[in-house]
Length: 90
Picture 1: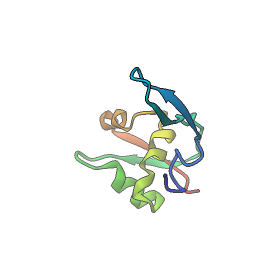
Picture 2: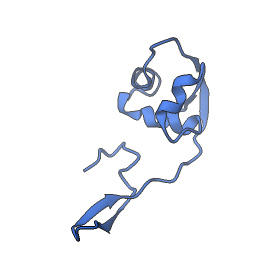
Picture 3: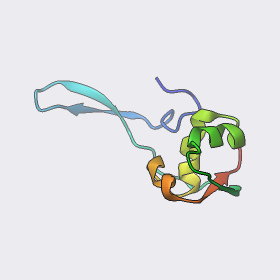
């Protein structure tokens, strides 16, 4: 269901019963992990995180790693930061 490079790839699943009795499968949230920082990037207005991930990590879908490197579970939290930590490539 997820790409092998997704942070959800190995997260596992569990069943949830909705109020109407329907059972659905949910994905567990991965625990945040510390990632080594390679350097810093000064963002300019309108600069998108997927473009930064594509440039520095060679994978535009790895923008979630920018969140981990900056201690942000929600990527939108990085929108107000001038400096963004860039993680080392795996």
